[in-house]
Image (cartoon, rainbow, N blue to C red; front, side, top):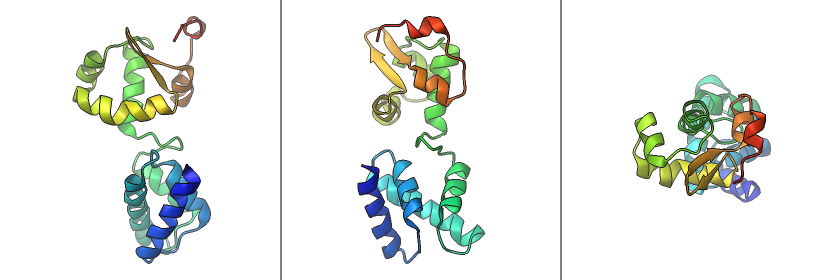
Length: 157
């Protein structure tokens, strides 16, 4: 999927009349949550960064730096995604936690969490949904550099 999206990024860069290397196209595609619309939005943000602080050419260094500045990490998670994971892990001891409780803790709308945040985190294997609530998986702990306790490994998902 990132390979397909990188083609979209390359084509959009041509339309925006900006030079971009293939590694940068792929990096933007990986950070786009599998969504062409987000690819284009990220490309424009990276382009702005390249025009102001770079030479106008988008390379991998400029791409990684600009994505970091806007809060997107190598897994494509943004600040809200990481807050969501941290809330489950730190406040609810890894879960299970109900969506209403998570939404209240974050001061976010439940629908926004269910429709925007959770699908990507589920797809990437950071959380699971159970009848009892959301549970952070070991991958989420590792991603946030938090210790994963042995008892949590024994959970049944």
